[in-house]
Image 1 (cartoon, rainbow, N blue to C red):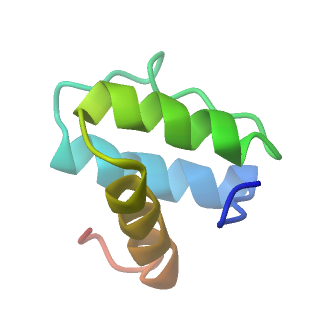
Image 2: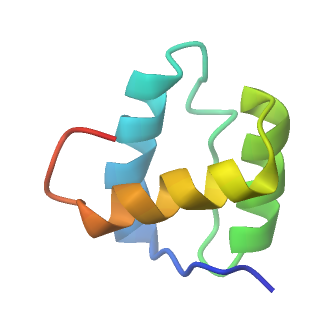
Length: 71
């Protein structure tokens, strides 16, 4: 089970932050359906070549500071 929960509305904001940090990622690569956090984490692990802990930490950080543009 995923350690995080992201709504579709939140994902739109988080996706922008992720794309700023990893500017090689496209909208198509960052598709997300609500409730599919596990698939999102796995996909991001492969796309950015990082471990699970790093991806989860990055997503949690983006969610905590959702109104901030920084990641």
